[in-house]
Length: 551
Image (cartoon, rainbow, N blue to C red; front, side, top):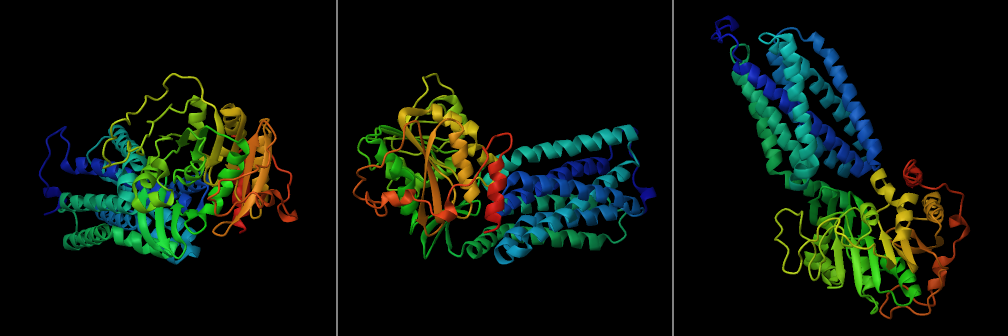
């Protein structure tokens, strides 16, 4: 049967082929944006600086789409057959993109960047070919003005659906590898559906059916084995057995166990190692806590693992600890996982601890410790985590923005990840420290973890300069943590910091005799000129990337 013998369609009626192709435009747009977002997320995980990575990925992808659109002019005959081949290639390459990049980062890290941009170029070019081909096929039965509006409508709707689902549903529930494979299957199913609709026009029908079945089979097999692929890649990358993995809307959380004990990684960056984390957390907490004398109200910004809270609770004078952690997955993990609660001494389940799952910058602006989230009592927050049981009695959440006087704190411990991107970099700006100063009691101390003064010397002193710019006194110091190397901290206060006469007795690293050594900076870590880190310039992110890039 030839195209001329296809049954006639009633005037004004939409052909099934037209409906199928418009639906494919929705899927093509959704899948194309999904692959772009997945590539950007992986690039930010591995290469850091999310703004730079997403910007270059998006630019490369759009450029490639333009190349594909230009190349479409050379496809003149057998347009449905070309469309099917391209759809299958997009399904295969795009669907396997996250898995391929995960494996490349583990086994061939030097090739990661080349492979990343190469795959983005290929997928973008193929997607750029698809839309013009669909429009030319639809042109047979749709007026031009309707054709353009319909195609663009479905294209933008597909992009909207994925842009919302990617961070809120797909990555937290499925992870990047499964999400990529799922959308690859969607591309392949569109191709299979189109084979049926174009069966009268395709010259090698059996070959097209076989190609669809092969691609679908490969993607389904990869989807079934997605967990093994992830474990295979992460075991190689982290060099330890994986105890726990989760992908929250904010980060990928990995806990490993090996020679160094348990280790926590966020987006591939080491946060602590069980063997020596006590050195870091004792150095972070006790110089400020002990110097205060008798702190009653303490706030911890970041530090969702509860290790800093563990150290704070060693002071009998402490009446309340407010932990402000953006990611509820972190506080749930470190309050419920048996091994991890042992590491933090069950600190997050202590009745003195109140957990607020919100952005620390916003929390400071709101001016209330209870502005977002429930007081914890004896349990960590569970809201927002799929599959978690509801909060128990006594853990009713308070309404965001509830009225109350701004809280001030005797000690504020700031334990954020290093400023690897602009979203974290805002937490190291003068705007943030100005808000922090308002929440600090008149005789209080704040302490900030401040990267390595040896590896990132200018970054360290940029933080010091920025804190001083809001009118606070600074007392910088450093400690050696084998897992990290030489690490820096800054005490900020209105009054001069004084050396404490005594420390809690059960410490493993610090003592009253050795504490003064932390405040001595050798020549290769001595102060250097630095500019103030502002929201408008985020100079620290650029400096940090440059200095650590040499390491």
